[in-house]
Length: 114
Image (cartoon, one colour):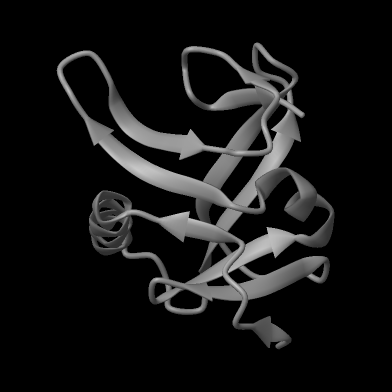
């Protein structure tokens, strides 16, 4: 496993608490990591991927806030410097992606263009 100490993304305290809660509730296996990525689609061209998954051959592995973060090498240009937060408000509840690389995004907070 090629693991690096560079932290390409940041997780806020709220996001860490929610991710740990999800891991416990869904009984995520210990060999799974937190997958952060992008995929085509969404109202602005790309949308974010966030979930627990097994490591794949194309993945870079990072240690972020005690989580093993899995990220495809090709996705790093879209994700470097991104902060993942947890919002729990009256009108909006869920993970929020604050991406300094996004040229534009839409109101849902999960879609962007680069």
